[in-house]
Length: 176
Image 1: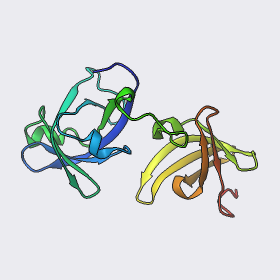
Image 2: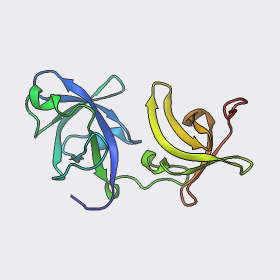
Image 3: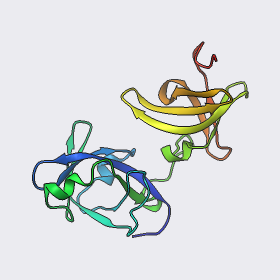
Image 4: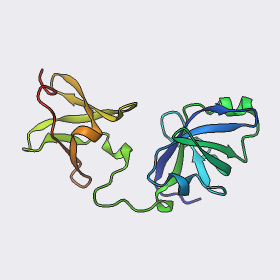
């Protein structure tokens, strides 16, 4: 497998059944392509880093399941082993993914980006990301604490090169 930058493409939610299947949340715009039989993924840790041994997992089968997939890997054949994979990430070399469009960004690239109002006034810096039921939420560090910014509702643009996120918040969101 290629040694270029690894991108998070999925997160293991839990074991499923007794054969070692895993329920996987897809974190990619091409879930059917990424989670196809025969595809090899890199095992990640619960923090999203590659495993120390850069272990590879080959998909034997994948079926859609409640907004994600039930995935069976050749290397995981028992429930007891599958249970140890809860909350770990699955990664793929960037070269195996479609290149990002001008208006797209990898979620992990949002960390550390400067957040500004559309007027150019600085709001703060993205300190953390949360996948909430309402969608991706940015935890933005400000001079006086942090503020949670729902990505889908408030972000109007992301400039990957300048590392700037522009937002249009509703009245009161940024009040101290």
